Figure 1 (cartoon, helix red, strand yellow):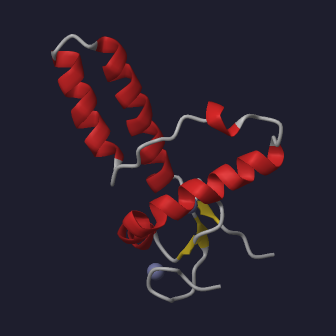
Figure 2: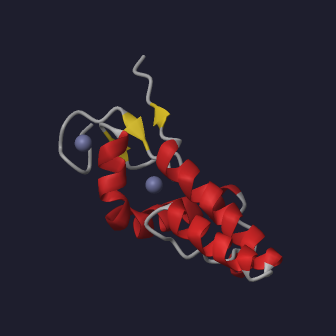
Length: 110
Ligand SMILES: [Zn+2]
Ligand SMILES: [Zn+2]
């Protein structure tokens, strides 16, 4: 299987959707802007398959930013303005997005 970004041998899967394949974290980052929309629907598709009865509307759509850094900045600003609830929410997104970008799992060939 090829890295969807550069076409080289891809050995790592996107930790969020488990579908997109990359050769390196760099390629995943480079492709994230393209992949984020697809990743979201792939992930939702997976979730709806595993829990079909869950109302899809309960799933709050997440605004995908290029990286968690955007949310760290946003959250920090909110915190400075005393909007602690909004800040906490942003930090959760930041953490989630950082995981999406850094948590690519090794694909073990048997
Ligand atoms: Zn690559
Ligand atoms: Zn993905």
